[in-house]
Amino acid sequence: MGKAGTDDKARTTADIEANIARTREQLAVTLDELAVRVHPSTVAAQTKAKLRASVEQKAARAYVAASGAVEQVKAQFTDEKGRPRKERVVPAALVGAGVLLLVASARKRRRG
Image 1 (cartoon, rainbow, N blue to C red):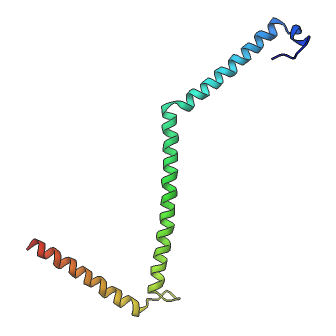
Image 2 (image 1 turned 90 degrees about the vertical axis):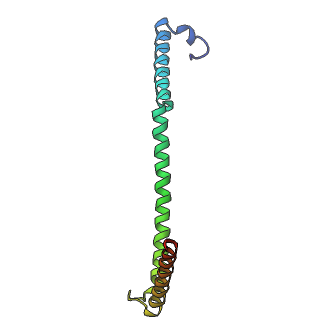
Image 3 (image 1 turned 30 degrees about the vertical axis):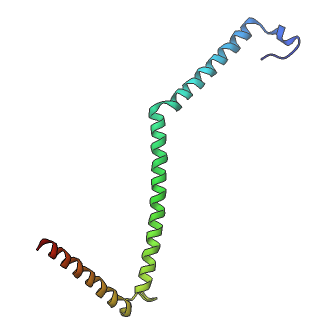
C-alpha cells in the first residue's frame, strides 16, 4: 500500500495499475504452487517417499540388531582368534540334530 499523507495522491493511475498487475501475478504464482502441492499425485508421491524412508530406516535398525545378535552368537562359539570352541559347538550340534530327528519322526507319524 501507499504511505500516509501526500504520497498517496502522488501515485498515478499507471502506478496503481502496475501494482495491481504485480499483485495478480504473485497471486497466480501462489495459486499455481498451492495447486501443485495439493494435487493427488504430489500428495501420493510425498506419502510414498515418507513411507519408503520409514521402511528403510526400520530395515536398517533391524539389520544392525540382527548383526549384533549374530556377532554375540558367534562370540559364544569361537575363541579370540576365530577358531571354533569344540566344547560349545559339539553340544549345540547334537541338540540341533536331536531337534531335527524329533521333527522328522513327528512328520513320519502323521503320514503313517
